[in-house]
Length: 138
Image 1 (cartoon, rainbow, N blue to C red):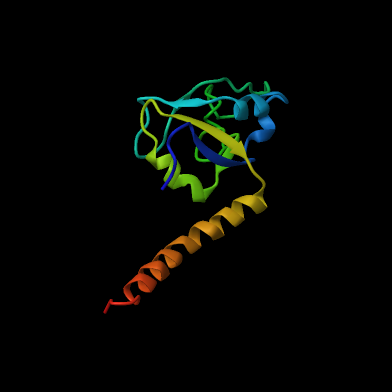
Image 2: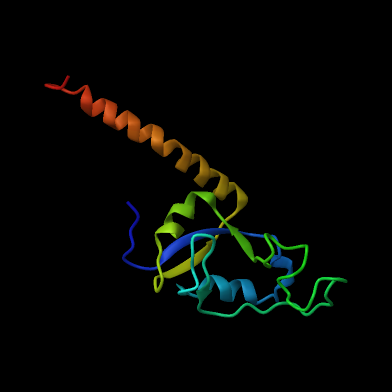
């Protein structure tokens, strides 16, 4: 069971549009506690907390005025990084008003977390089978 006593810790691999932020922005991003806003829904969360400063640039032709409207982003929004898939269930348990913090990890750590999360269902089945085969059980 996840521990929700403090802010939810969500691991992130820095990338995608990480090159578009100022040098101090990643540290500020990872040091900030972020609060889930009422704008969160089943598709995505919006969080409030700190500020990420973007490197000024000229918009590509046809991209419009919104910096989120460019083709070199993940899913239409400029993204400083990507959640580790193993933490999506933790993120999914947060609700409006809950606090989260993002923790930078390497790709190797993210892949290891994915393997560990993938092994959990088999371990749970094994534990159930072991209990049902114990003394006095049929």
